[in-house]
Length: 136
Image 1 (cartoon, rainbow, N blue to C red):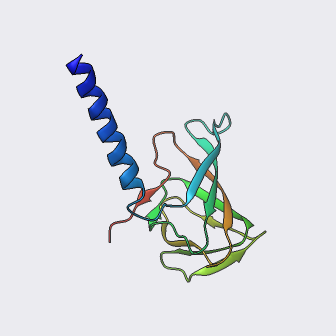
Image 2: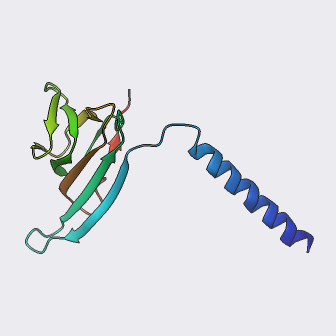
């Protein structure tokens, strides 16, 4: 019985640490995978469709993608900057392309008062990473 009580206490402590760490910083953007399909006409590649929801003023960390990405703003406005290019703010209905390996320095909600939503299509190999954080 003591072992069972000890395990329960350990699990409760772990749950408390996990929930406390979740509130220690601002939550990141919400990313939802809508589709993840192997491509029959491009062996060894898959198509990935994701939706990114940004709260007002929220941004992603600087990152790169192994795969090719195409982004479409569903609502609000998104500021995006790829290394070597100027930052551009895209409004709902506008889109852009990022070649595989591009360093995405800025990806953020351009508004501090309204949410924004982005739809991203990617083509990559199953073992390639969707997002790789950049080192400072």
